[in-house]
Image (cartoon, rainbow, N blue to C red):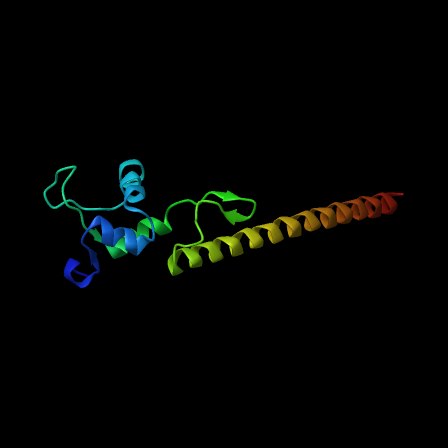
Length: 126
C-alpha cells in the first residue's frame, strides 16, 4: 500500500486527537519510546506527520502496566480504541487467573493420581 493510500496525520494536534492523548505526552513518547512520527525537514524541532497504520502498530506493541487487574496507564476518557484495549486487557487478565486456578487444580489431581499409583504398585509387589 502506498503512502498516499494511508491516513496521514499532519500535525501534533491531529496525531494527539487520533491517539486520544495530549501533544506533550506524544512528544515524550517520541523522545523516550520511539513513537513513530516523521519530520520532512529532518530537523528535531520541525513539523511532523504520522501514518495512522504505523501509529496503530506502535500502540499495539506497547506493554501495558497492569495493577489490580486493570490497565493502570489508561485513563477512562480516551475513546473507542483505548476502550477496546482496556476490555481486551481485562479479558486476558481474567483468562490468566482462570488458567492459574485450573493449573492448581490439575496439580492437586496429578499428586492424587501419583499417590494412588504408588499405592497400587506397592500392593502389586506385596
